[in-house]
Length: 206
Image 1 (cartoon, one colour):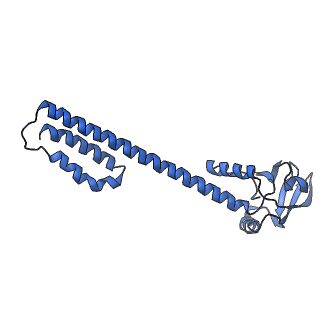
Image 2 (cartoon, rainbow, N blue to C red; image 1 turned 120 degrees about the vertical axis):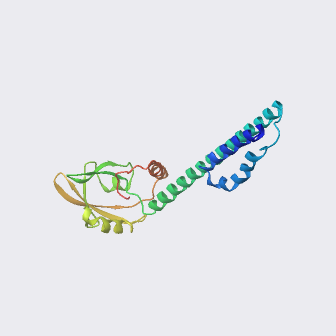
Image 3 (spheres, helix red, strand yellow; image 1 turned 120 degrees about the horizontal axis):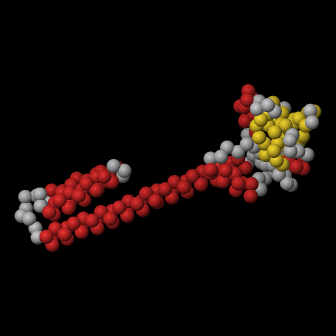
């Protein structure tokens, strides 16, 4: 094999290595393989010709590497955009069911404990307080056994609709009714960020 074919063979090996990660290149490898055969049985070329061929193959390899790197980067960017679009769609779908303004945390012993009430929210106007324990939603007990029934009931929530929670406060139970409001823009933006981070937020569906 002549010096030209040795350089071309190196190029072919480079291409086949990339084809491992980019299957679309495999259909072209027979063409690149022909470069490795070229020069076989030919008379040895001059040192200048060998250096020229080596430089050409090196340049082609670099150009191909940069091109494939750009394609990979573009693919990652498209993936990020797709994920962001999905997050926005999911959160806007959730927003259709209205907003109450409660932050809750599930306690193994007490159930769902209110950890925060948003200022100016329907929850604050209705009289919810930090430390309240949510017992039931529209008459359905907040237990694992009622998970499906609760999900179905909350899917009926909408902006302007009234919901009623049974709460426990200072050892006594009472009911609090509130009218769901439109989700504020800043809250919706926060939901999208939390979704994007894959964080499970301990709060009710509204």
